Image (cartoon, rainbow, N blue to C red; front, side, top):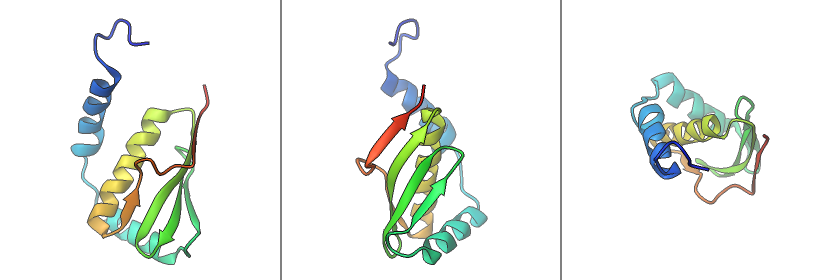
Length: 108
């Protein structure tokens, strides 16, 4: 599975995360948009990011959790989800992503 690269998957992910999440900064519009989107959702409502197949559910005021992922590009999906958490941190919105999804489907 890891032949040829000489690096563990966790090391590869840490490099990708550093480059595409940690070094990325949300704009004020990103923060404003997420605040407004979550504010307009009712508890139990869902927000779908179609480009990466991520579904978030509003579980409380200012609190969403990753409900599911259905994707053929898991790396892009995870980067987008991590960025959403970063925006949520700035917006004062709790974004549960760790051990939160009901299911993950990776289409090959």
